[in-house]
Length: 376
Image 1 (cartoon, one colour):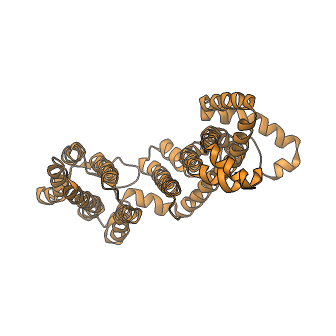
Image 2 (cartoon, rainbow, N blue to C red):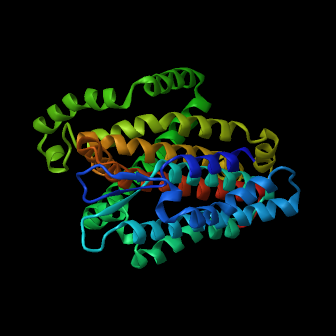
Image 3 (spheres, rainbow, N blue to C red):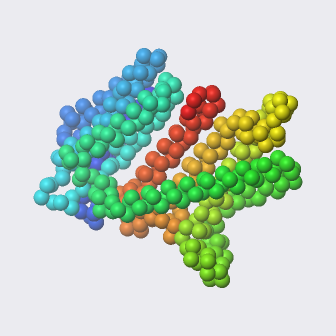
């Protein structure tokens, strides 16, 4: 009820959209009632009001009705933006653009929080969850030719389409390399820690220390040594290793990713019941066979939790790596900050947020299925 109440307050008190004649001039803010009058604004807020009323006393039937209202609210937001674009944008001014106001952003945020809460309470199956999540995106795409292409965020994308696609590829490549390298190194370090207690104490101390170093400081510390190495060894320079670019970014990202990966790998391997392993050895399995066929499968769900944490963390930290020329979506964020263009900032930030949510959901679901013994 509190979330829906907050969404209603944001809808009626904060600007719904902003309209600017071009990219440079600050936009004029419009409340929901100022876009198309009181009637459409009240109609658009009905799902929020009904959801706030239903949330007073919840049972399973009310939860399902509340879920339907939240989905209706999410679907209604791109429809509202389309109506606002048609109402406010002059078709004779091609540079005009509609920006998303604070009221709409807060309403969206409250609806998404409500959706997460309802998914937890109703224990929705994965196909239903993905369908609910994708429906507003489908409506958004369908609304583009109807007037939503006047949205400032879409215009920023349209003007940088090729760069945007390339940036997504760079971002995913850097994240994938980080997770793969940290997984291999983390598994090796965890195995050494289990065999040698002194390595465990020293390893966790060093990894905890690396986590305390700010990312920008670590990038700076790597600049000098890598520039010296690339100057001294031609083969490193031919690979593109230098003080700026992908090399320091990858090293720093792997350094930050090792702690969660090593910790989860160590806990996962230690958490396997020794009696199960001994039974496998008693059946004639070698040490390697018992590890690969017994200990590793039992440890895999917890190990995947480390992969999940590392992946989500790497997706966010890779944005910072754009400051040292590593590419990725972070460059749109910093370009937008330098130009005071918030829609350009959002062009880089929103895909990063979406990547993190999708990676968290997919890997979390896979870990739960393995934990329950379900087929993947």
